Length: 401
Image (cartoon, rainbow, N blue to C red; front, top):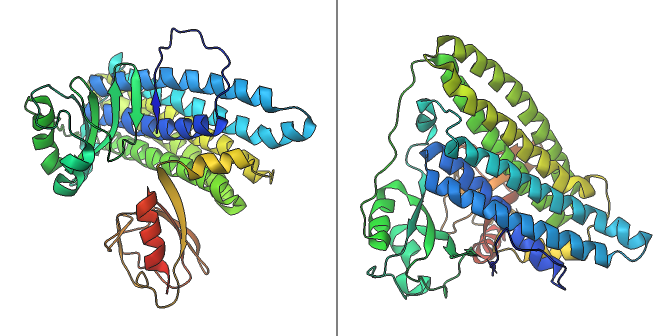
């Protein structure tokens, strides 16, 4: 799923395509765009930034086709009311795409970023790299199932660009071909070896620069927190659609307010840092990041607006979100289940199932967003977790008594 061709310069005409498939592709593309754009900034990687702009062009085509199909589907006022939230989803995905493109241009146009952005790379976490498959690679011509890359190294192929075509969330039967541009995510300790095996060249990790300006460190910390909250808002927005859940939609609204407040503080730290910076112009890119990050949280609110206003979710939307390769699962922890008492370490439960818990709704405390490392799951907790469909099913089994 997720294989599309075409070029941004091609004329876009109406085609009788599935709106559901378009929405799936837009959702997966918007999430990948957020990931790639911030990785490009944190790694100062122009190649990854270039892939963001290619994906942004593809999103432009997807949203035009989706709008055409929706206009053809609205035959009466009742249809228009049911499809209005779908237009909000299309518009929100487009805004995320535009914001991601603006973030990438901070790198490509050398707008200016402090070296302290490198220090924002968390320790011992996954990194993202872009590389091309060479003909001589032992992986060339083999499927991802045959290579068994993730099980052996922890490195995942999250997307492949084959010429002008994109394969998002490649499956086990996807084969790597010479010339494929692969986007890899995995542990820093393993990414170099996999990079070398695929490309035939040595991987050079990004340089990390320290900052001696306290206000600049605070500004960088703020922008990273804004990024994390905006990503969470997008996840919860799609989750609110999937479950037709007004509470989740309200949390998206709360997150958007929080990001707005953070941006105000972030701008204050950045302006104060300019007083002590040797080259204040080098901080201009931070202001661009702040604006684009807020745009992403605004887009998440637009995606969930139909649910927030209690407009019935159109069936095509539910199908689109449910059929996405990476899904958000809603799981309740039963009394006596194997998840009861399980600790969360950076949002990942200490279990055999690889799921990332984004939020916990606890009867007495309400929603706990981005769970801390010392959070222990309790009976009655409702978990919103992100992962593959297979992992989600196994996670539900663990939660059941």
